[in-house]
Image (cartoon, rainbow, N blue to C red; front, side, top):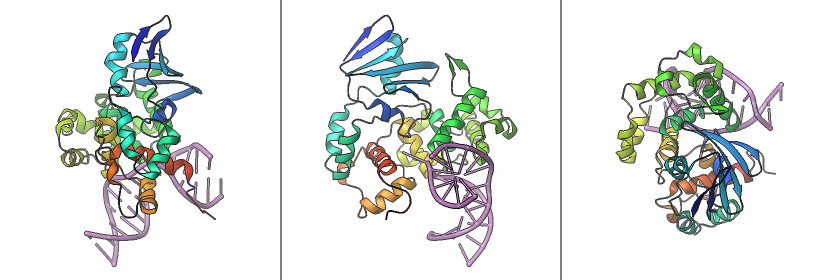
Length: 278
DNA sequence: CGCCAGGCTTCTA
DNA sequence: TAGAAGCATGGC
């Protein structure tokens, strides 16, 4: 891989180990917009990015090299070798088929606070609407970043009331967001601490927040703390476990259950119908 | 219009 | 301790 500065931004050469469209739109993150078949824009931390996938290269429009190294290299977890991991997952026939069809879906290293809020919003909700809620949340309470807005900080949210937040149309989840912000601000939930805790303790800590159960906590651990051995079980995964893995999950996913989960999730969501099968 | 959505909390037996 | 109800909203 090589990072080349050009007049429009950066070229990342020889990095083809990502299905960009699926990685950005597989339900792990909610702030990326697809502009064309191969172009995406989104906000991470205080940076707005426009990314184009061009053959084996990634183009970052308007980005500088130090920004790439300090933010995007980490966000896309580029140093991790997915080739080896996926090769192991492919011992399972279903995963093998999914990986052949979808290519490399990478688990992004998102910010814990944004991930926590996003998955509080996700409860009993659909992805299209989760995106809408988060967009309104950022527009109303974030800071201007390029043509968009940053994710609202816990400090800002902790001072808001249920009335203030009505405009984002998140229904019964609004008090949960306020509770999360307050527990983060007063230190009752400490991300630096959670980072170091064993999974059980980390999950327990997140579940002190009202509106955070096991599934939401596990999504935060997987997508916000890169705990790749965590396996969040939602209704899609529940279904696939019952029908495809009635005797238990395959051994080959050990250590990377979270990555396997993403393939199962996408497979279940796109290749099966929720209702009647004739 | 009715079904369903990357669940959780609270109530009930 | 397990299971159901209620929850707020809108995409499809």
